[in-house]
Structure formats: structure tokens, C-alpha cells
Image (cartoon, rainbow, N blue to C red):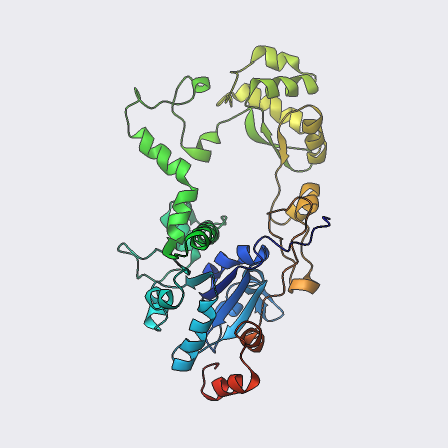
Length: 412
């Protein structure tokens, strides 16, 4: 632990967030790094608390995770007094997040043009499903839509012939907020240097496509003649399927069954392949199939694959991971979301926040400060939990003014 007491990296950054559901993740990353995120909610609250499974002691895990570290204040932006309080908050803020369909704040009289008049340096970002332009801009949507739109999900067909959504990692709903957080920080850096804020927007669908750029760009490249675009030298320049689809027929780069699970072998470089063969006492495999210097998966070599299948069944996953470390050969465990927390690397790098602190076990930010610890975030707030605290500490309102606002219905 460092002896310095400089506070977290984003201490002194204040962000006003108006969000519904998952897009509120855009500020979770910033709150984890120390930003003061004030979540402005309507009197009824963000119904994220009731959305999707699991529900932990009456509150959704989605809310417990995405709203951790934030303060909640309720404002009725349909009232003049509510809008006035919102503008007071924005006067001293670095950024405003509109995490809902584009134009939601503008319709309430507190859109970008209105806010830049009172804070020319404000960074205003809208995060939505399909963005502010294009034929889909007004369509309602949920997170899986961005992944199906971006070509990331192959429909499943059950035994009765019905199509279904298969298990898959969610991309757009997580990547969109991450790109958005990067954009917010970039905007703040420039605004603090120039005094001029900006307006930006991000679509979660765009983010899903951007994260999968390798496959879509490969397909575009393959539209060109083979005289211009080929495969790897190690594959005799034959084109393989784009992205991970091209790994299906790999042999030196493949998943194998261990004695108690599965492991991933990644000996596509000749050096790693030699180390593996030498380590298992099978230099004959290297002599027979030495492979190319780089990027050689030995695709389609069933004879070699059969040899490796038998070899990998002789040791446990833990033994193979240790072998790879000892013999400088990339071998990784194949975990599941259920077993990941038992992995020693996970336990060393991502110790879960306990349920006693945040209401449910949660992963910490993957960003690490060398020699410093990030503060443990506060538990996700109840609706309006910090209204009085924010009005008093941030805006300097006294008891009489807060009482008047309540009487006027501005606070719900």
C-alpha cells in the first residue's frame, strides 16, 4: 500500500447521470475510479431495481452492480423547481449523461443547449441503443438486440424446431458504456484545458459491431480477389473463416479434454510447439510435424490431433497449467462462469467484493493502480437515498430551502 494519500484517480470529477436500465453502466467504471456520480432519478425511481434475474433480497443484481458507488437524488424534471435544481447541479459538474433514448432531457427542458448556457465546459453524452441517427434511432430495444444486430449471436434451434436465444456473452450493453466512459474522460480532459465542453453520443449497437471489427472487416477484405487478399503464409495462403470460426479445425491451437476438464493449447509458434513436445517426451511429434515459425495451427491434421487428445487426457487441468508454465508453452484452463471464481489467477487478481458490503458478491474494477488500492465502492443506492446529502453538501441548500422544494413537489 502506498504512503501517498492522493485519493483515487477521478477524485474531483463530478458527473450527473440520468439513466434507465443497463446504459447506466457508462458511469459505473468512473465511479469505481473515484468520480462523484450523482444519479438523478424521477420520483418513481429507475426500474432497473426490478429488472432481470437474479433478484437479491428484493433488488436486482443489475442495479446492485451498475449503480454501486453512486449517489441517488430524486427530482421531478416536469416542474420548474426540479429543473432549477438540476441546472444547479450541472453548474459545478464536469459531465452530464443521458442514458436513455436520445432527446429525453431536451424534452424536459434540460438538454445540451440549455445546459451549455450555464456551464460552457460541460461534456454531454447520450448513450442509447441505436444512436441519434439512422432509421433505427427511435426504436425501443434491449441489450441482446445490439448483439443480434451486430451479427454476434447465432440463433439456436430446439428439439421442437423453435428458435431461441443461446447463451452468449453480452457485448453491446457492456462495450457501449465502456466506450462512453472513455469518451467522457476525453471530453473532460479537453474541456479542462480549453474551457469548452462538447456533445457526444454512442450507440450500444455500434459498440457491439466495433468490438467485433475483426470478423466483419475480414469478410469485407475477402470480397477482394485472392490475388490481393490471402490467408496466412503458414496456411499456404489459403483463406480461413474470419475470426474465431477459423479456429475450428486447428490442432496445435485447440481445446483438449484433460483428466478432469478441458484445457486450451496455443502452441502455434514453432518455439512453443517444440517446448511442448520436448516437455511431454514426444520429440518425434515435432520432428514429424515441425510446423511454420509463426501462426501455424496445423489445421485439419487429424492424426496429430488424435495423438494430442490422448496425451492431454493423462493429466489434470491444474497439472497442464503447471506444465505450460514450467515448459514455456501457452496452456490455459477452460473455465465456466460458475467455476471461474475458483481459479487461483482469478482469486489473486479479482477478489470478489463480499455481499456484506455491496449486497451481492461483485467483481471489482479490472483497473489496478500499482502500489495503491482503489476505494471499495458504496452499495447501490435506494431511490433518492442521497437527496438531502447532495442538496446540502454539493449545492449548499439549507433545511428551509429543501423543505420548500419538497412542498413544491420538485423532489417527488
